[in-house]
Length: 120
Image (cartoon, rainbow, N blue to C red):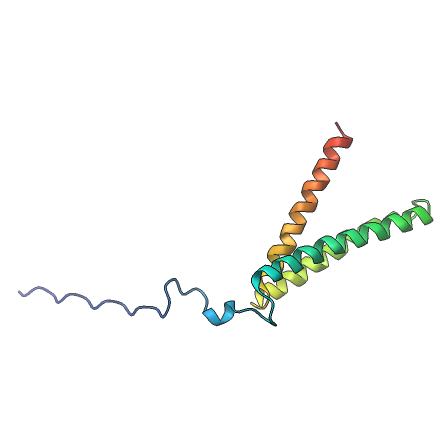
């Protein structure tokens, strides 16, 4: 019996580790990845800050009678995160979600520090 011929090498991908084509990583609308991350971070922190100011103003005007308005910042932040996830899954602005999650992490860190100071 003769030995089997060696197997043929597999076809090489066009690019090493070809998870996504280079065209999908190009800046969309002229905004690079760093700009997307920055815009996501500023949008999330700005949304929560505006919501907290709104809740503080409404709480001071109504003497805290309408506590449901304190859910406004949480609802706005959740809506922005869902929008960010949708944009990320469509492979448009992949950095926007990363920036929004960074803003969430920073705000939760600040919230944890406030709780540590108050309940010490």
